[in-house]
Amino acid sequence: MSGKREYARPAAHYTRKMPKRPPSGKCILIVTEGKKTEPAYFRALRNLFRLTTVDVEIVHPEGTDPVTLTNCAIELKTKRIREARQGHTVPYDEIWVVFDLEKPHDIRRAQANAAMALPGRKKSDSPGLIRPSNTG
Image 1 (cartoon, helix red, strand yellow):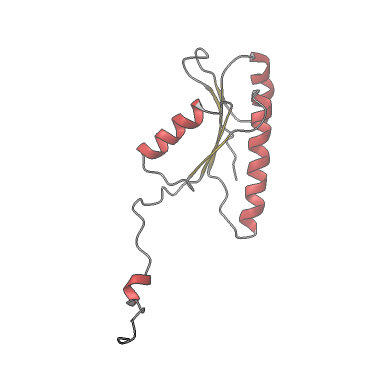
Image 2 (spheres, helix red, strand yellow; image 1 turned 135 degrees about the vertical axis):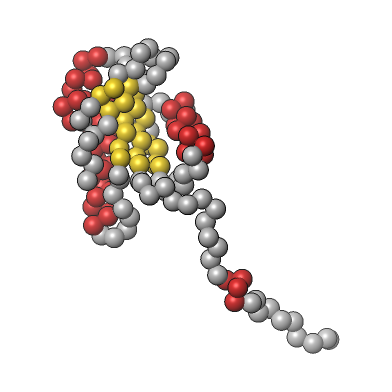
């Protein structure tokens, strides 16, 4: 039998490397109506702007109407604030709710929970957005 093998690695092997993408500095939550299309658009934008997955979180809840989506965003915001107080994460800097305009009366109810609604032109053109102004 020949000599003992050396399994030790140099200290430089265990050091952390700098991330390839610098963090954006913002943490964004996007709540979408669609399961495939809207999340695909936002993933493409996230990749285009080289944002990390921690910076942009895309969620699709069970409901599809603006009120349900807005309520989901509020619940996730509250949960994230609780987690941030415990030191596990940071609160969201921005929260976006994205939906197609199909029922105008739901937009008015959603506006009661959000600061501003930006209606889209047609269902196929652009989604409506609700952006709560006070996320912290």
